[in-house]
Length: 149
Image 1 (tube, rainbow, N blue to C red):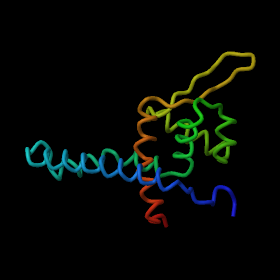
Image 2 (image 1 turned 90 degrees about the vertical axis):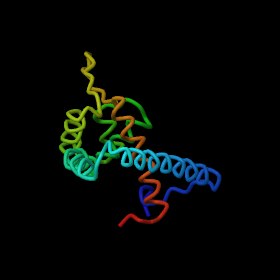
Image 3 (image 1 turned 90 degrees about the horizontal axis):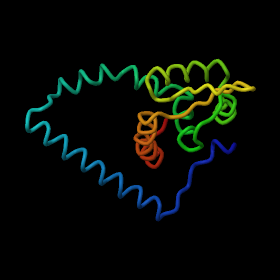
Image 4 (image 1 turned 135 degrees about the vertical axis):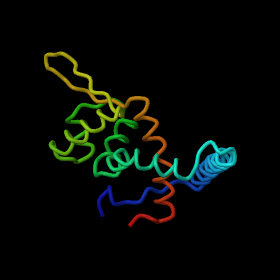
């Protein structure tokens, strides 16, 4: 078993706190959705159409290396291409492709620092940070319920 295969074990206290916060957040989302639906501000078809619009973003986020890139930048802060490559294990070609896509979506920022040597640093935008943070409860929930296939 490699270090990446080991399950993340959280203390009971931390697990309970995470569960409590997730439940609080879910109740807030559910209450807000009910209120919006009752007021007629949004319909099922509106939600359905929104999902179609969001499909390219969801498709990218579910691709290999993308969440690893976002979490690397979230946890470690701004990183160079080679640092990201080392942390994620992605090939240069895959990493380059994913970084370009994430940049196009406005999730990461690419900053070139003039040298010598010339350096390129990648960092999360506020949207990228929020996206990474919002995906954490879902990942926690899936892992804690052993829903991953």
